[in-house]
Image 1 (tube, one colour):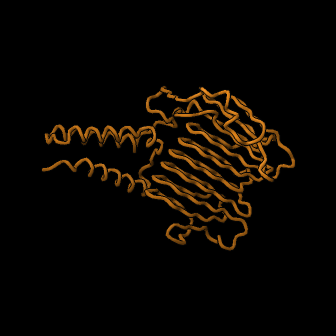
Image 2 (tube, rainbow, N blue to C red):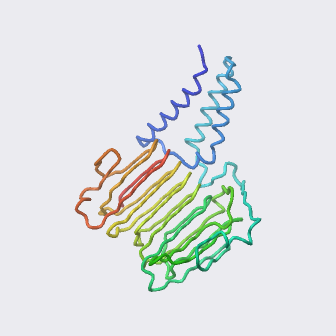
Length: 320
């Protein structure tokens, strides 16, 4: 019997079975594995090519074993929140040759604070609307507490420095918190962490642009106007509070697990534009091919609108 189609067929069967098990709640994907275990697919492809013309039983067994073990690690492996495969290994690539010219790369006007450790931006009573822009991958971002300052952050990392820049955009007070001169890769999220606090008085717009990241935001005590989360291989866990007149949430991912919690009585609509993604919107009514609404949404005064797009991701919106 010809066995040249065994491996592609086996890969499709295993991936399809995994999605079915996930849909019925019997399997939980560790989506970060797709990022830090991607070389397994090169190994699978390479073994299949090397033994493509070998029809012996042992060659077939070897190819099948590599597929089963490799996909087993990707689908079932739990390596914590690290983005590196080997425990204790930390790989960083960056180019700091132009360190003296970093300020020239930032066209925003304002005071720039650079370094590691603690960051602080004082609160001013005249600030009614504030925008926080966050950028940088390979980091765990946590935001779950208030402060009497406008913004506070503590960073824990091995090599990465951060910038905190403030400027004005019409009536919006803007804060830019991003990695300084970070070009390349940094995969060890255990060593890279940013814990942030916000003042609860202003209305907030939060934009996160990142690659491989774990994000845990409890925003239930803040007034959120807009929340934009764009990431690659990411894990986004967000808890929202009561909406303003309109709270817009825009989430775009590659390989990600997205878990959004909203208040039980909040009116919410969901619009999805995703490919091979798994969606769980318990308690929502389907109003179109890609649209969902909570009961009573049309007549509600304050609303949350969530737009989700992504590739191979797991999306959940739940009530609390």
